[in-house]
Image 1: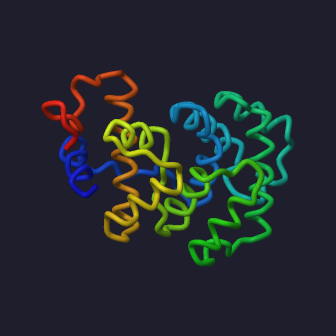
Image 2 (image 1 turned 180 degrees about the vertical axis):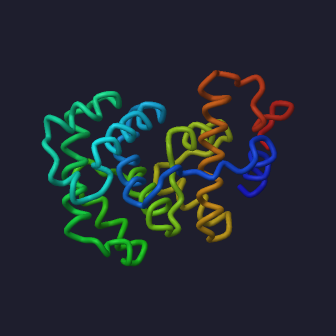
Length: 202
């Protein structure tokens, strides 16, 4: 997997992802980005900031109907507004949650309304700065193209066992996979895929 990382790094350079001013903004972005494009998340985040709602306490106290309007651009806005309120209440009531050990933190996040494995791991990695490799749709698709099958946990274990345990590396690698997925998989540029060389996977 390190070879794959180096290929992507040479293609795109460092991505410095995830863009956020605070760890809580990462949490908000991780919830809002479910089933939508990041550009839509950016619009919603701007709306929340303009209304001084980019912190756990004010967001927890926000009017739900008003919140729905602010995040409407991300789709599934009623569901996402409710999830944002729920997770904001949780973070407001548990301000030192990121001090928990990585696996305990992940389990706690997974117990929250609307938080699945990818969302939980995004929060663990990018907000808490703890090592959990994020497996998203692009990662799964690329693995299938390389003849690698597995569920979320199996693919995560594969990545974590084949690259150094390093938070910045995890962040960069995941960001590069997303960029590659957007540039090639999302645009169906399969004939240009760098994962394939003379019919064989690198």
